[in-house]
Length: 147
Image (cartoon, rainbow, N blue to C red; front, side):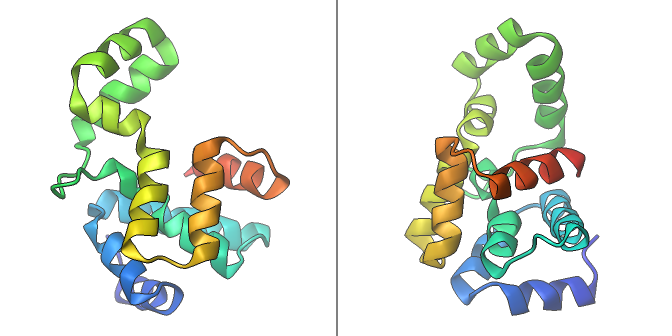
């Protein structure tokens, strides 16, 4: 669920273009993003750019036609990535949802840029996609893993 107060928070944090991207996320990914932002706030690391990036970091999991990554695929992906990496590689070569998940960081950066998201948000998304290692992005990754 996303409360009315949380929806207002998103409206206050994101530009109209960014809000349209956030709205494409299924509720469970919106919830994850909001939980992540709350954790970043508690840790004292929440800048406007980081909040925007956190709210949009999984938009690449949504297909170009607007189809979300289903919860069943999440289960398969999590189990195979962690316990059966060879199976994950095999699935990635054969199933579009798994391919999309594997590429979602770059897709998120591209989708944000194309949609006209703020430059600082786009730069953070691209840094995540490129695997840039900074203290801020390490904190983000750790928080993302916790949510």
